[in-house]
Length: 292
Image 1 (cartoon, rainbow, N blue to C red):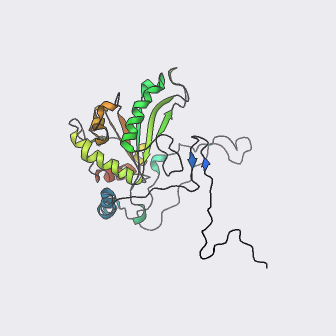
Image 2 (tube, rainbow, N blue to C red):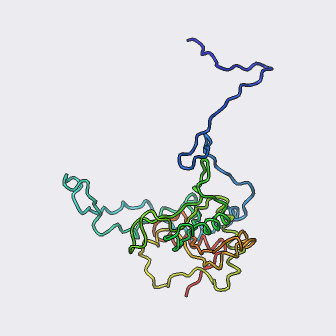
Image 3 (spheres, rainbow, N blue to C red):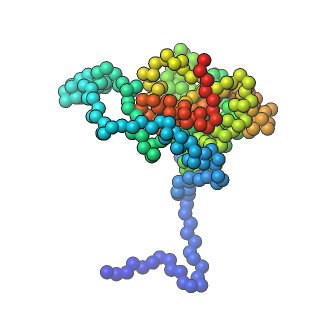
């Protein structure tokens, strides 16, 4: 078998050949893209992340553990509304009889691998004035960029999507049309997520006099709702609370108008009791709850 001939050879005292790789350009932004996906790792020890792995994770495993005797029974087969083998209804929307019954979805077995954990934090802000004038989004874009460090349509391949503009999906009452920008959202993961959580619990919430905690539903409230199996904890902050963030407090006059935002703590918990597990996790990060 003939030996393939090398294009470039390097001797002992020879300068290695220069390999020039032409970077691609993003079709959306026109900025050059690297040939590999860039994933940023943690650059400093994260106190809240270590607190979860060393203390909170064991406590949550103890609090939420549910012992099961033997294997689980097979799920009950719910018949469809139409015969799936009927050629006249084969490609029609075929919902199960009695609804999807999402509130009856069982939680996965309790193991050390699926202990409830925080996957991401989503910040969302709605600007009603942007429906008639999209330049009203500039202030909230500046605000979110200062809070999270993410930019809109940043160049290159990243593990996060950065700032995203929320657009209308359908017509509502004649004043909202599809494609019209109405807000801004951003997803935080990894160290940026824990940094924002630390800032929220140490600088913002203690300085809010009217905030006593996230309001819990009454004890008589029904648990057979889709939100009870979602594993998401959400609450909102008014516009006057934005000035308590150190990133904005240092230069409040730079923002024409501050906007409030919704904060969603999204966990990996699913099934019956998922929201209770998510609340136990969030309360372990010093976020209070109150029942009225």
